[in-house]
Each structure stands twice: as C-alpha cells, then as structure tokens.
Length: 496
Image (cartoon, rainbow, N blue to C red; front, side):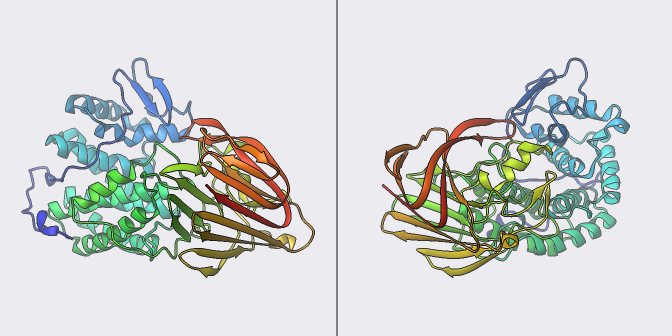
C-alpha cells in the first residue's frame, strides 16, 4: 500500500464547537436521484412532493423511504451546497416526526453522507453539526445487535465518522469494539463479505474505503482499526476483481440487482487511489468458483447460504451458475426487484428462479417471510480443479434425495452433469437467459441460445418458458428460460 500519499498523522484542528474539520481524498459520485423541486427518482420509482417533502412517505414501500432518508443524493453530480443544505434543513424542521429516518440503519448512512457533504464544500453548519451530535447519541442506543451482519457493520462505519469528526472518546471506544469484531467475522478468508451477495460486497467495500479515506487523512485514536481496514480492504479488492466478469458485471447471486451498488470498476479505481491494487486470489470459503475457457467465463455457487444466524439475503441458488461469452451475458441470474414481503419476493428467492435443479417441485431451502430461511441445503465439494468442479448438496434430504452436479471444461465446451440419487422423483433444471436471447430449437434436444448451442442428454422434455428478468428494484423485463425435465441423470453440453 502507498500510505505515504496520505499522511496518517494529521494535526488535529478543532473549532470552538468541539469538532474536527475533516479532510477527505475525492470519492466516487453517487447516482442522480434528486431532480429539484421535491422530485426524487429512487429504486426506479419517481415521486414529486408538492410543497413539503414527506420523509416518511411509504407509498412505494419502506425501502423507498429508506433511500429517501439515506441522503445519497448529496453526492450526485452537480449537487450544490445551497441545494443540499436546503434538503437537510427540511429534514431537520420537525425531526421528532422522522420515524423512518431515525431508525438506526438510515441514521448510519445519513450521518456519513452529511459529514462527507460538509467536507466536500468545506462548510460546517452549526445546525447540522448539532444534529449530527444528536444522531450519534441516538445511534449508540439503537445499534442493530438484533440483526448483526451488514446492518451492524454499517452502524460501525457511521460511528467511525462520528468518532473522528467529534473526537469523542466514548464513540471511539465503541467504534473500535464493533469494527474490530465485525470486520474479522464478516470478511471471509478469501475476501468475500459473509452474506455472499456480490452487490452488498461492492457497497460495503465502498464504505470501507470511505472509512480508510477518513482515517489516513485525519487525526484519530483508531490506529488498530486503520490497520485492520487496510488488510480487509485488500482482501475485498482481490475478491471483487476475481469474481467480476471482463465487462465489469457482477454475478447477481443472492440479493443482488442492478442500479444499487456503483460500478465495480469505479470502486476498484477508488481503491487504487490508496494503493490497493488487485492481487491473485484463490476463491475458497465464499463458495464461489470462476472458470474461464476461450471467450467464455463462468461463475458457480457451491457454497453455503450465508451466516447461519442471518441468512436474510440468501436464495435457493446452490449449484446455480452464470455464463458470459465474449463479455456478454448468456446465462444469467434472475436477480431481485423487491424487498416487499410478498409472493414475488419468495419467487425471486426460489429454486426455479436460478440456474439449478428443483426436485418434486420442492425448494432446495425453505425461504419464507421475505428475509427468513428455515431448512437449508448444505454443500460438500468433492473435487475442485481449474477445469473441473464436483459438489453435492442435501437440500432434499427430507425426500431421501441428494443432488450432485459437476462442471467440466473441455477446450471451448462446458459440460454440466446432474445426478439425482434417491427414491423415484421428477426433476427440472433451469437455464435463464437475458432479454435479448430467445432459445431456438434446432433439432430434438438441441437449442441455439444466442451465440451458444445447448445439447441435453437424458432429458424427458425441454420447454421454453417466460420469466421476469430483474434489472433493478421495481424493474422487470419478460425474458426466456429453458426448463429441462429429467429423472436420475442429465448431461448439458454448452458449446459454440
């Protein structure tokens, strides 16, 4: 790392109000979500408030209201001090009524955004400073130990900004305790975030970089947190650089979708500013594997559902895989379009929404109530090589059935073999395609799918079906998938 570019020891400069004027290296801009005159575009939904902004507006669901209260739009291109300050002032007019905004997760993201906003414009409004102080007092009493995972980690990053901005010993101690334990637990040995969502990995890497940016440019008493962040960021950079496709896309495994995290290459460029350059990595604990042959890239999921105590972002996607050819998607993950606790949420998490196998119409894991996971599949990797992967899972153990799948690379060909062992059963394998690909039957069980040919051996029936491909929250496009019915054994050969 090249920390000498940004000195660690920065003279402390406090004003009479007891806060430190922050210095930050330039950070990435956010998506444009505010269009003036009370007009917002969040989660692909537009809304224009008439005279006053209703910060508790839930007409588009609570997640939309959350995003309204994050204040990410303070860092969109072209945002001026006067406009941002006006929005903050509006929020502060009647803060006791900001029920959603004063929940701990929105507090965590908003406080970071407010500190960064004042820093960018080198303007420190006393009213905002006083409110931030109150925000941090509230957050300390509402830390999300009941949820843990990325929520508690976000709480910790917010406290980090509070500790450095206010030079508060109590917040500093709490920051040290939370970030030290959570970073150690949540960043796996191969660098992945332990909830195993590539989207959240990108978001949390950006947050970690903001925290590191803060620490190396300002006075603080958190040297051990800075050192740990430095180590974990490098691991996260290595994992992200390994998992992304050549065109910069992430595989949309688990709760991932488009338009939420910034472009991965933007975040990797942000990391390079601090000397974090991608290095070699062997994917392991996260359960993801990546193969490349000729012009084809494949990412597979043979890992766990996530942390046992918080699997809220997990899907029934064990043994699913995503395939790109010449930098373009051919087999895709459906992704997500909602966090509402409804049928669509359950469907998007379900087995039939992923490129894997469903047996007897049963889910490989029991997803329910939006963010719950009951019975869950456990995987065992049998063989793991550069050109061959073999694994099995016990998600259908209650049926007395085991699903075994292998991926084998041969020249410019991918062979996927499924074996279902156990009592009599009906099995279906799914292959989802992006909106611009419609499978075309060539002959028998041979299909042209975009630039590649799919051949199925052992199939009883192959059917083309329609599903809704998710291109972001509240944004779905009708697309095609192949449903392959079989018993016992299925061999799928994918080639040019």
